[in-house]
Image 1 (cartoon, rainbow, N blue to C red):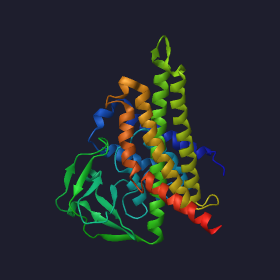
Image 2 (image 1 turned 45 degrees about the vertical axis):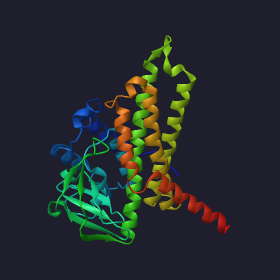
Image 3 (image 1 turned 60 degrees about the vertical axis):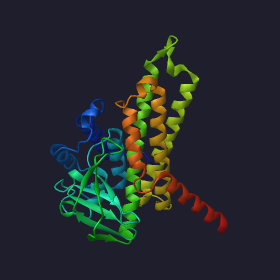
Image 4 (image 1 turned 120 degrees about the vertical axis):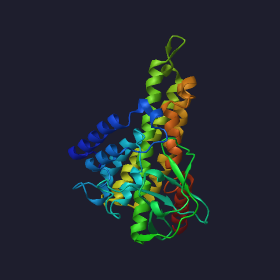
Length: 325
């Protein structure tokens, strides 16, 4: 499979990277805690085409290009319900243009309270059930209360129960949304895993111990090498899954999406933990980038199937193939 990006894809990546450098400054993360995306930022995301890429708003662009973009968004810990809005754009009017913000949640098995990411800043919530996708207007959902978030950059609300909503997708469309969601969540995780690897590498080259940079110590080299392998494996798997889902190659798109989400979940969490270790005393302060990426990775790791759930799915598939051979 050919992975080299063309000029248009590279231009989109560079434009989004420049935008994120300006709007999602990693040196001022503490100032963004508990906040959503401001209206100007959200409108700019729509103008760039980020929100409408899966809805055909950018001619010739689809899931592959969206994966490139979401890697940049993940590397900058972008604010707002960008992932769910991108998924919702083909199904809900006004999302692609930025007039409507959409978040989402996977419906729990029971009828208890549900935590909804970015609920306070969103207009609608998409409820992903086993066989259908429903739309709820958050303004009419009763007793919504703020929640204490796992990730301070992902504000949350608690909904006592999810009432039935308008069905906006069923059958194959729901399967496609789950697959696309897993791929884009994986792309965000890859971006975060790369960001903390870069931070750990830079620190290891600057921080000296016994008169030499700590990056010259073999133990630190091994830690960073493991981070590099994890992020490169996850990135390759994510782009492969996006390409297969977009019909650019041969293979099982659902299996590829599970592989990508599994590897990216590992990369996001493990690279963050390793970066905290490499940064030492500085790394254990909450205001450092690896802590923010670790918390965002915990949130993303649970979206569209956990790392362990996808590992179990892949193991079952391999077992079935062995049993039938």
